[in-house]
Image 1 (tube, rainbow, N blue to C red):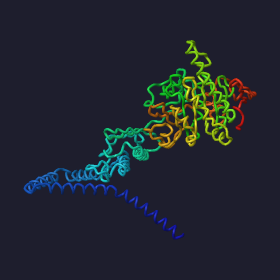
Image 2: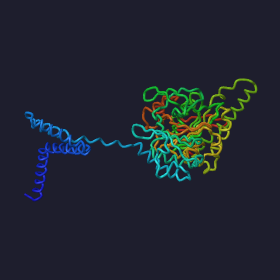
Image 3: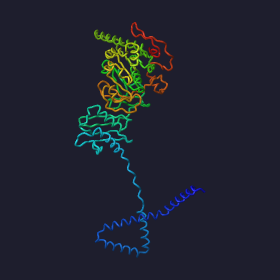
Image 4: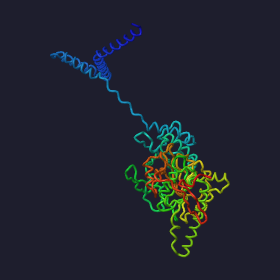
Length: 522
C-alpha cells in the first residue's frame, strides 16, 4: 500500500472519529455551556447585590439547600432540574439572518458622490454637495421599483449652478442617466425658480402596434404613439389581438394646418421608410400620392400601380419630371382656387383633393444631380413647400440623420413638423427637432422609436406603428399581411409584373414608368 493511500485512509479515519466524538460529547458540551451560563448569571447577581444584603441572601440559599436535602429524593430531583435547566440554557440560539442590503442607500450614495464634482466646490457656507456629506442633504424624495431600479428622484442644487446653460444641464443629465441605468428613458424637469430637478424614469412605449385603420378625421395622420404626458387623447387600436386605448401623436394637415409639411430624420435601420409607408397608407383613402425613392432600394415598390398613386420614382430623370409636375400642379391648383373664390363658385374636385409628395432620402438624388450637372431635386420643392398648404399639397421628406447637412435650407425652413428616429445624441436630436429635449434617450431602442415635434410644441416621445414592406420576405408574415390589407389593390406578391405604363404629368410632358418605379437611376 502506498504512503499517499495510507495518509488518505488515516485522514478519513480521524475525520470519522472526530464526528463520532462530537456526537457523543454533544450533550456534555450542551450542559457545560448551560452551567457556565448559570455561573455567569449567579456571578452577575452576586455582584449586583448590595453588601448589607449578601448575608441574608446566603442564609436563604443555605436554608433552601437544607430543605431540598431533607426532602425524599430531593437531591436527585434538584440535580435533574439543574441538568434540565443547564441543557435549556446551553442551547445555541439561531443566528439572526443577515440584514438585507440597502440597495436604495447604496445607489443614492453613489449618485450623490458622482454629482459632487459637478454641483460641489462652490463658495457656499453650507454646501449641499461635499466630500463628507450624505445624499439626504440634497435629495428630497426618491422611489425604486421592485427590481431595485430608480423610478423617480427629486434633488436640490446650489443657487450658483448655471442651470440656464444647456451644456451644464447636459452634464448633470448624463451623470444621472449613467448611474440610474442607460437602458431606460428619463425625463428631466428643471425648476429654475426653486433650484430643484425632478428625474422620472419613463415606461417603454408599446412597440407591437401594427399598421391598421386608425380612428382619425380626414387630413389627420397618426405618426405614432406616445405616453399619456405627450397626448391628451386616446384612440382604440388593435394590439396583441385585443383592442387597447393608446395616446397617438396626430399630425393635422390641410388648408388650415399650422404645420403643413414634415421633415423626418433617422438612424439607418430605425424606420424612416416605415414612417413614410405609414403616412402613405393613411393618406391614400383621401388623397393622391407622388413618391420619390431616392435610395432606390424599392422600399415603396408596393405602391406602384395602386389607385391614387400617380408615380413611384427611383431614378433622377423620373424624380425631376415628377417634381416639375408637382410644382406646376401646385400653381394650377392655386390659380383654380383663386378663380373659384373670385367668381363665388365651388372649387373643382381635382383641386380640393389632397396631393401628397413623399420623398425618401432625396439627398441621394441631389448628389447625383450635382455630379451630372442637372437641377437639384430639392430646388424644385420650393413651390410645393411655399404654396402647398393653400393648394392642398403636403410634402413629407425623410432623410438619414448623417445626411442632415445636405438637406437644403429651404426644406428646413418650411417643414415645421419634425421627427427623429433611432438612438441619437441629445445635441443631434435638438438640431433635428429645433428644440432641446427634456428627455434623455435610452442607449438601446427598438426600430421606430424616436421623438416628434409639431410646430412650437415641446418634443414628445414617438413609436411608429409596424409598417413592414409587404415585398420583404424577411419581414413577419403577419406584419406584411396587415400592410397588404390597407393597400387599395390586390396583393403585389401574387400579381404578375405590371406592363409598362404611361403617366400623364402635364400637357406635353409624359413620364414612362414600369412596375418598379421608373427604372434605374441615370
